[in-house]
Length: 305
Image (tube, rainbow, N blue to C red; front, side):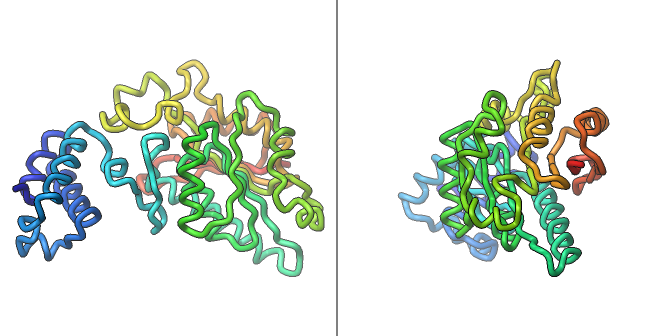
């Protein structure tokens, strides 16, 4: 019969010892309801035969470098639990900072425009699990949120998360690399009558995206569990065009955003200067970089003049 120490030793072949212990604790807590106190009291040795059989299957998947979030079917993001599966990227702690930046900025705009309409319409491009769209819908009052993804499987997971967390988000299957921005305006007209009262029609006040930004040449620096299991379509861009998605979104943003509307991106720090220069060439102003919790230039904001 396996216990916490056994799990930690087996996972140490894949993870650093400290991380292996953290994953062992997470599995025992989330799947079997065992707290640290329970483990210290030896309750991890008292699981039923069926539970031990399930635990063995879980550990084997983890030994194969499958991310624990996929094994457990969930990930925590901004204090909420999101369902995740192999069809979507696992939400990262860094992206929580992007959501906080947007929420803080839009909240400040509301304060500065007291007495004026403050209706906001947010577009999340490449929503994946829906973590950004759902978080913004729940944290920003009076906001319409529309979320796009090219993957029907990803959208199914995102919709499930929105329903489970009580977030009002409109999801649209859309390929920004091939479809025109005007076609998006036609299919994302939820609440259009109300928005026309504010003069915004179907346009957006904010566009946010955490698009693919890892160059193929960087793959050798990535963890095995990411490379083997997370969707490459959501990770990689061609080495010869690392700004592909940012450039397309910026150009579509000129059509989709209201004057004064903002783009927010999560970015590859290696491309920060190049990206800022591109946004300026595309007609955006007040381009700002923002660091993540590790001090890396991870986010950018730009305003449509």
